Length: 134
Image 1 (tube, helix red, strand yellow):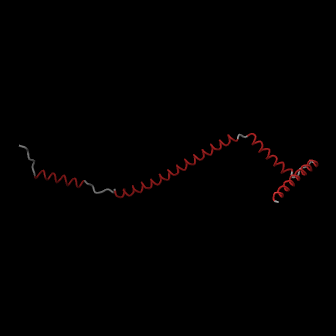
Image 2 (tube, rainbow, N blue to C red):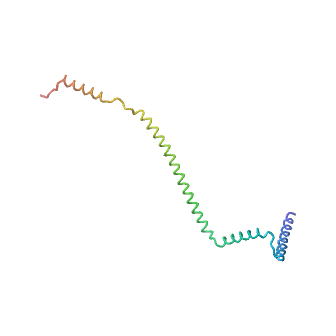
Image 3 (tube, one colour):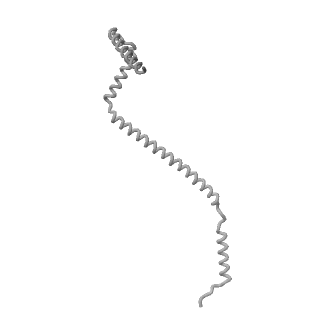
């Protein structure tokens, strides 16, 4: 039963198309002429594109453009990742340098120790004369 409905609907639409075509031809007018004219122009443009465009070259060019874009985006993303790692490492180095800068405050000069040691050696020389080999 469902098939019969589809067949009858198709036949009714086809008959209506032929009746409308004959009526328009006899009266020399078109129903919805402006919108049908615009539709005919669009169809003509699509037909021209299909006949004159090399779709193989077009698809190859588009694939190349997409590949270049993906490569550019990948390089940009990797550069962003490297810069983020650089900032992180810079902060870590700055942190460690600031910690060691506090520990590396100038200490007492070792000069006093060296002076005391030199004085001790001089006193030793004066109290113990050199022994000469005879």
